[in-house]
Image (cartoon, rainbow, N blue to C red; front, top):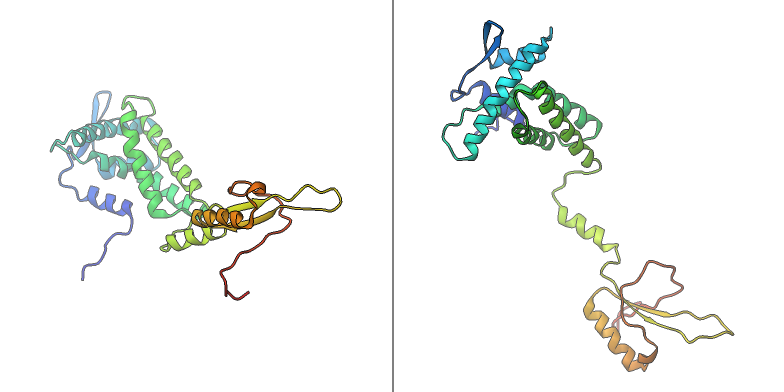
Length: 249
């Protein structure tokens, strides 16, 4: 029996990128004045996240990686077979920051980790075309966009809980509402010598509303009946419940 090896989309990204034979180019070429440095992906991620921090190196690594990812995304969009794997590689380079958001948001706001990981990855992919690789803080902008979207997603999920029996919950909620109630109101004659109130006949279907209308004709009350309507939320002084003949009270 085959076992599911990964439970996280970030784990899948990590496996695909670190074992990718199709990644082209396999190294980032970073130029510092007259010096040229070639960094493979692990070295590039080390340069981005480990101390001591070199801001200029970080900027140049992101610029090269984003440019390659944009070319890769364009190739995929037009159906080209010249896909280099750099979109996934950029997600992998951003994983240390994205994983921190997942830990914090899932702990503080109880957001579902799998949904949050998917949202963060999607944010990176969708933000890529909007960024100029030559912008001074291209990598920072990419990360901030993903982080904002991740926290917004987590905030919207507050109070939500996954459930398999969605239909049962929806039925239970609607059972207590008056959205489907139809009501027939019989106005009382105006009297000054004693209190009076209209009589309410209620039903939960339009078919029953028609039956109630027929009932008023039989009672000879058509002239004092207001049209059937959905009730407003207001104080009710009394009501009359109709039951089929023979039903136990």
